[in-house]
Every structure is written in C-alpha cells, then in structure tokens.
Length: 310
Ligand code: C5P
Image 1 (cartoon, helix red, strand yellow):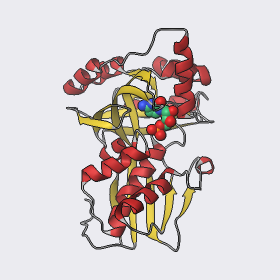
Image 2 (image 1 turned 60 degrees about the vertical axis):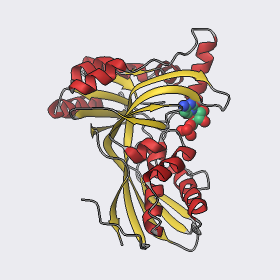
Image 3 (image 1 turned 90 degrees about the vertical axis):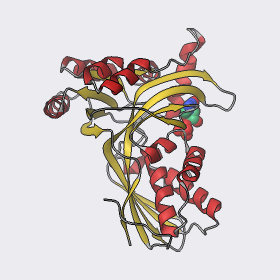
Image 4 (image 1 turned 60 degrees about the horizontal axis):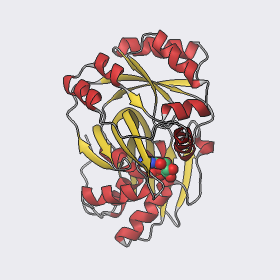
C-alpha cells in the first residue's frame, strides 16, 4: 500500500524505483541530436534502488551499496540533476539531501541512474507538496534521460523515439529473470558509438517492430518470449567486453529460455522457466565463475513509488 499523500510538504520521503530490462531493443539511425531512433520493449523488474530525500541546508548526495564508488557525487549525478530540474520547474529552492542505496547494478544496462532520477522526481514532488500531474513528471523525466520516463512508469511498455515515448502494451504473466553482473561497467555512449562504428562497414540500422515479443507477452508465453528476445546493442557490447559471450553461452547451456545483454550491458539477463529454475540457474552461474554476482528479479513490477513519508 502506498502512503496517502496530501498537497502539504513533508520533511522526509523514501522512494523505491526498479531496474529495467529491454525485451526488444532495435536501434535505427543516428539522429542529428546525437541520439538514435529506436523501438524497445521495456520491462521493470524487482531489483530496486532506494532514494531518501530530506530537507537540507544545500543540495547534497550520498550513495551506499554495491558499486557506490562508481556513482558521481557532483552535479552530474542524475538524481541531483532531477532535483535541480524539478526545483527550477516548480520554483522551489532545491535544498535537498539525497541518499541513494544502490540495489541496481551501476553502469550495468539496467537503468540504475534513470531509476534514481525517477525516484528523485517523485520524491521532490511529495517533499514539496507540489502534486505535479503525471504528464508533467514524465516531461521532466524525458529531459533527464531516454529511460527515465519508463523508470517512472514501470510495468511493461513499448518505447519509441529515443525510448522516451511510451505506450502501454498488453502483457500477461510474470517472468522470472536472472541477472548476471560483470565488473567494469560499460558506458552507454561508448556502446552506441561502437555500434555506429560497426555499421560503417555493414548494413545501416533499421528499426524493427517487436511483433514477436508483443505476441509472446499477449499470450503470456515465456518460451516464446525467450526465443523472441532481441538487442541490437549486443554485438557492440560483446566487441567491448568479449567475455560476455561465454556468460551468454553458459546460461543457454543451463536451460535459460532466452539469454541477452541487458540494454547497453554488461549485465546479462536470462529468462528462467519458473522460480525454481531461476534459483538453480542463479546458483549454477554464480558457481561457474563467469560473472561477478547474480541477482534474481521477477517482472513486471510498478515504477518509482513512495514507500514512506514523514
Ligand atoms: O538518454 P541517455 O542520457 O540515457 O543517453 C545516454 C547516451 O546514450 C546518449 O548521449 C547517446 O550517446 C546514447 N543514446 C543514443 N540513442 C538513444 C539513447 C541513448 O544514442 N536512443
């Protein structure tokens, strides 16, 4: 149950925001604005960052949890940018203390930074009692990053444009994912840049529609979904981190219904048959030394949600 909110301001707000995986990511041409046209199907999965916002003397950010040392603590932090943007939009002073507890892999292709930004937007809105309409929050989210509107929205959705334009899709069933983490992290612009480089000597990028993924989701058929998974960024991520190939093969050998690099990677996602298979798959992957950590996460789950207000 979400806490009941009012238009009155609060002193402290806690928000939980989920990781995402891309069930389909088809990348088209590089646009003049530096982004690529794409079609994607996002699913929010049950692996979370928690963001606590408090009234403070100035805008500050602290981070804990796995990979925290890789998260910037300056004005480039996406949650800090979200607070500044929301403050400018609503006329608030933006003096907020932000504390992020990371549960989502950092620089892993699972929208961890976008989750923090979405959480900060929702949290500031409650902290200040500004009660912004959903569409306005989504508009701010799109200014912060291509995946931030989805981190607000959650569930399963089709993303077009650069990923920020969302359409609800009919999705039945719950899906058991195993996420295998690798050290290092991959930079999203570097992976898109590698894709452009590969395409200089190959076919140009065409945006494919996710017909098979959408049909599998409509039926609630995990085996069909596993077969239909697609990510045009995968060859670029594999070129930058060749060890991911062995990880993908290992998961397939262990009976995963589908295996795919998540977003720009290096996290690899495996679709399990059901929960018991996910437990076994996670244990086997962890035991084989092909990744640094494994997490189980079911999807779909809701987007950024307030869990506590004071
Ligand atoms: O939107 P976001 O800040 O997450 O994008 C990070 C980078 O990823 C962009 O600067 C761009 O290099 C690349 N990108 C892209 N096309 C997209 C989304 C992201 O080229 N649709």
